[in-house]
Amino acid sequence: MQKGFFYPRLVRPILDLLRQGVTPEKMALSLALGGALGVFPALGCTTLLCTIVAIVLRLNLPAIQIVNYFVYPIQIALLLPFFRLGEKLFRAAPLPVSTAQIQGMIHANAWAAVRFLWTTTWHAIVAWGLITPVFVGLAYLILTPVLQRVLHRHVKPIAESD
Image 1 (cartoon, rainbow, N blue to C red):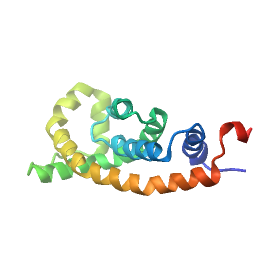
Image 2 (image 1 turned 60 degrees about the horizontal axis):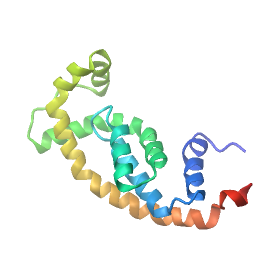
Image 3 (image 1 turned 180 degrees about the horizontal axis):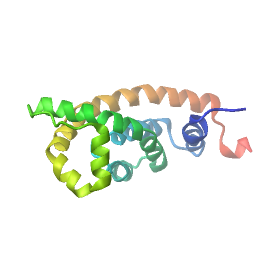
Image 4 (image 1 turned 90 degrees about the vertical axis):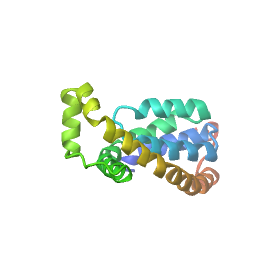
């Protein structure tokens, strides 16, 4: 039976972690934070951020990183909106660049891109920081009962499923 792209890469690993004893609450927080940190508006930082948060909060590192990697396209898509929101918050002049130009600058000379985008990136990080707690709270509130239901209905311990 074909289960699509997401099942073997996202859903099954989460189910496996629930089977191994990760609580729905810890899993929900791991997934919510993985999604939020995964769209952090500074390219190249999310894996380290997710790792630090998982260790400090004692969350499931594989779960937080799975979501982090899956939201990478969303991070790229939200980069410019976070830049623009940061510019509005700080009343800064809009930086005349596109997402493709930003990626090209990073690939051509990462250090020069960091220097060029420094102020705009910090403004975007502040905008992200204002939105993130609301996102994490809502995602946690939605995911916790869903994962509790999944655990009780669909997840058998690994020893029983063999």
